[in-house]
Length: 289
Image 1 (cartoon, rainbow, N blue to C red):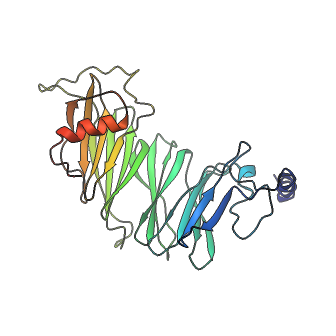
Image 2 (image 1 turned 90 degrees about the vertical axis):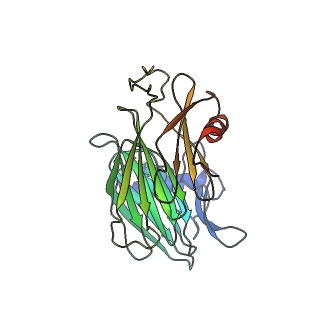
């Protein structure tokens, strides 16, 4: 598709209405940069009004761009990231507090879901899932003075990113083995060396008997295709809990250094995340919210 055709399509979008652009870099009442996203049925990016200095990526819908993730760093700069399906890349936008904007691109592979952007001091950790060569999690550390580079860090699909103190825990789920992988970064605020080393812990999500013969899993209810944990953040720890078979709740505790103890299972509800976390936290040794 030529840029002339794209331009004509954009002009047609303007004629549809007089609303402002759906994605904009704005300032909140405190003066902090924010990414304002207001998707409509027709898409996420296409403006229906006049493009101005706050407008972000007005041609995004026409090239198949995905929903953006964004976060503000400690020095007030904003970083946004989104998938460009046209060439399987990740578009990175840095919007500086002083007004300048810089766009870069990363090779992302075939993305699953949305990327995640986590602020770490004056830097950001961008993580995402790719299905190329099997599900895997990639990460890129983006700093104010250096463009990032994608690194494969975990198998499976990205399910959460949890910051505890100066540690960042990246969680992925490997559906074929029903395992949770936790990759822990320490030192992303002041990275040296780059790439920052990552420690990986593997947790079996299945409940085991003491002998230890595994309890059979009903794959129809084990949530192996779209598994997601329940997470509660405390001051110095985070509780990660999940629904297991036989009305059990599994849990682990994360701290500033990694996984605190082995997974524990207790009798619990099959209801909401609030109920699951309450059951796990009530019995969990070492959990200090």
